[in-house]
Length: 155
Image (tube, rainbow, N blue to C red):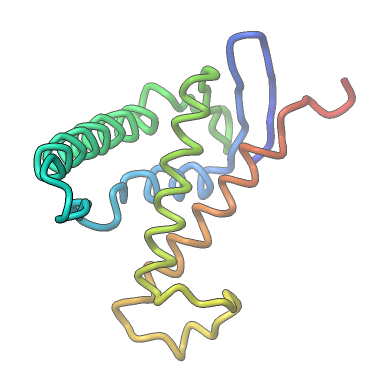
């Protein structure tokens, strides 16, 4: 994945077909884990109402982010160009993409048991955890691409 063009309002990336398919696949995994309500102190009399409002807000934000993630990898965001694909995002969409990828990476890492060493032998992982390791790696790869390719080479 390479930054092909950066303008004032957005970014255009050139991806191989495999990268484009992998980006679509990993972003469509969001959210990786189900929503878990947040618990607030039970000693505070107003905590129950604040907890309810907080959880409603967090759930609404997560649902909004899920819809945005779906839109980020819709077919109209990609344009075939020979054996490659062009992917365009504006600045706000790029930030949303980074948020979604970070959620996927961190949630997958948590499912894997929050390992300190990320260089694991896939053959040593339980079968149901292998895909989470792959999602974590793919999300990290795409995060690096979106973060490190902010300027067109040579400009």
